[in-house]
Length: 243
Image (cartoon, rainbow, N blue to C red; front, side):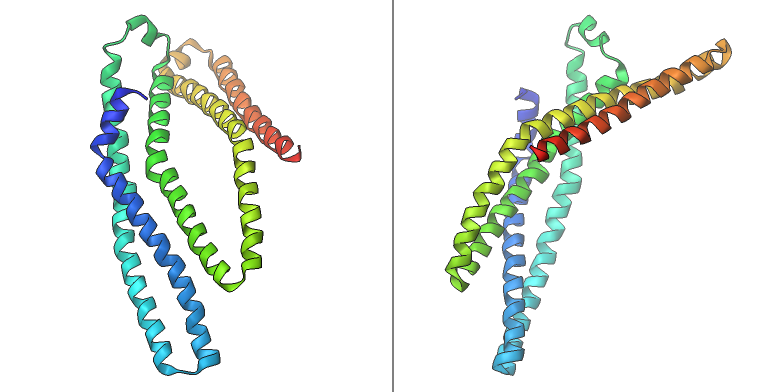
């Protein structure tokens, strides 16, 4: 990974680590709250013990308050810290471009280069602020739910153990194809936005030269290419699922 990206991520490493910890705690609280809801209903329907109902209700209320507390900090990190990191990385990478060979930079359209850098930076930061967090949440949920299911019915637990590896196997098989499709679509989108911005930026030139029809046709051609990429990508995904 690029040293600039590593240094910037390390700078915000504490915030992202806290995000993972708070998310794990929040997930455990959500799962525990679901369990308490079931016990609360049991206390009403079967035991008819008011004290037990009050106990579960107070516990659920406390969990709800804790969830609000952790939700505030996780939202703060996911929104503000993530955007701060993205902006900082974009700025540093743009400054770094001035140290590169001029001809190699001029080969790129300014709009395409800017969009590509922003997209890649956002994707990298999103991995730590979103994907990694969701992964930890899924792991905690799976472990917690599995423990509840095992205590309730070991046979159902065995069925879960069988299907979980199947799910991960399907994900591993389709992941490279999904990544390839997303990359192709991203490149086509950048090409479209570059052409569109060029169309607007050359407003006076196009209007003055009288070649509006040809420029309109060029924009439509790029637009059709983007739509064909979407259709082709959708068809490729469906064919992969059918296989």
